[in-house]
Amino acid sequence: MALYIRNYQSINPLRKPKILTFTALLFFFTLYILSFDFQINDPSNVPPLIDLNAPDGTSYLTTEPPSYGYKNYSEFIPGSLPLIISISHGGHLFPRDIPDRKKTTPGMVKSNDINTQEIGHQLSKIITKRFNGRKPYMVINHLGRSKIDVNLELRFERGLLIDIHGHGHTENYIELGYALSLETLSIPTDTLNTNEEIVFGSSIRALCARKQNELSFSEILRGESTSLGGKLQILGYDTIPSHVHKYPLPTERYFHGGYSVQRYGSRNNEHVVDAIQLELPRLLRLGNSRLRETFVKDLAKALGWFIQTYYFAE
Image 1 (tube, one colour):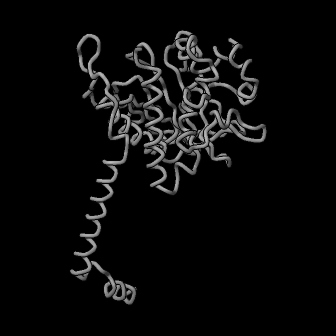
Image 2 (tube, helix red, strand yellow; image 1 turned 60 degrees about the horizontal axis):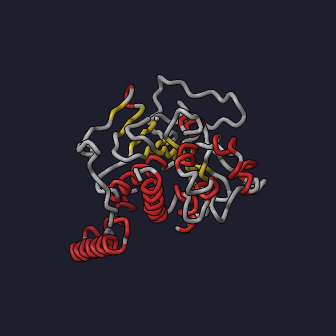
Image 3 (cartoon, rainbow, N blue to C red; image 1 turned 90 degrees about the vertical axis):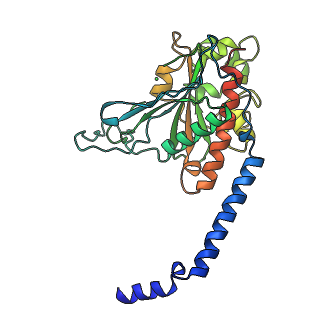
């Protein structure tokens, strides 16, 4: 061990002032160039013109602090946009006084969706910048999934809940869940558009009802320029459903939307908040942090367009 320490000290560049100075200068120069390039070329730095005041003249910008549940196990971050970001399975707290969930069914999952909290916070920051300081609501579960599995409400006349999860399917698609099964998505487009039971059973029922005289159900669900999946696909991310991948193949796995989307989406007619489950592949959540950062910026663009197009008053 002593020999290892001496050898390390003899080659440690931090012990050589010239090398240390050169390294520091190179680091700050690189940081300046990257920052300048990002400010010039990133279109997310040019936010759209959004009214910051409510009809009664009060400001939409909120300074309210986050609220926490019992022992900070849950967190609610107030917002000022008709967008709710929910993160159910990224918790990092594993208190001993809460027993582990028992595996009562074969398909029961106890593992966390890694990096979904980090992605959610970064997404919120970028969207807030795009909308001149107006930020999404956030609901975060801080308990680990081995302790609890939770699979959220409103100041606006309409709204959108995005429930962020992670999947490990080999196809690496972004999976958008609208509470519609694989079999339902694969039926002919004409039937999809005219079958009211399918529209009413989707988690974006309220949106489709508002836009029924302008867009068909399939256009909102997977249109190239009219759907969230279409926007993500155009940005370079294989997404289901979209105009390219309209539905999963029978051999492909697909999450169509869990409890939160089914319970709190507008498929329950009394609700005016739509809901979409966002299932992210490992490729976008793990490993390459630069790829993840780029994706979150692109997701913010797509979501920013979606809520500005469909959830602000006409």
